[in-house]
Image (tube, rainbow over all chains, first blue to last red; front, side, top):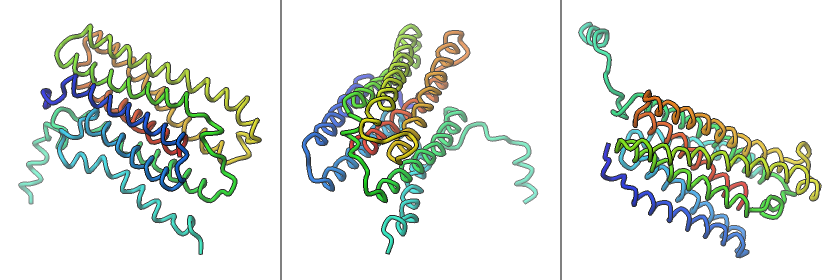
Length: 92
Length: 202
């Protein structure tokens, strides 16, 4: 375990980033942006925050690459799920 | 070939291939990957039902996002407390560990309290106000299924963390067990970040 990499100050730094991203997200919603632009930005912010939690709090950054592949599998399957349901989403 | 079989019979792998620290950690990661698929299925299903509907209300106006923004903050803070608790027990500082894990448990309970208040408020006031009921609109169905499924995970996490607190106090659990509990708790936080965006903000 790379204990040196998990210093308390590094965690606090991630916390501030997550907090700022959350505040920006809420502010974006109140700003009344065009719907598609808002949706795109919010998805980017959500994935960014989720990745920060997984990489730093769950230590994925310091684990073997294969474990990261295991952790990513559900997301790949979700993409396939969406692709499989596309005919239902956009019927001819 | 017969040699290979003999080797497999005699030698059991001593450490987990992906997580040399413990088998439990690998087990938790596999469980979380499966759990993520449950949440993924629910979120994708929600997205498709919402897309297919032509009278979906704006979530922000019906649900309100100020309380949930605070709940997001709560879970993020409790995640930080969890990593600080882990750092404390790795240094052998038990009192500090107990302080931070105690805060994690309190944060989880406070989150559940907020959710109970939110649900009560929605069911008795806000949803009837816009003419949506539990059983008549998919907006309510998907909302309660998704946040309810997540709330069950928080409940499970509070129970899990409490048992870890007790086990460490009695000296039965050490740092590696706390790390595994931490993985679960951070996952619950991660899922809430996604739910907050997809269900409340979008």
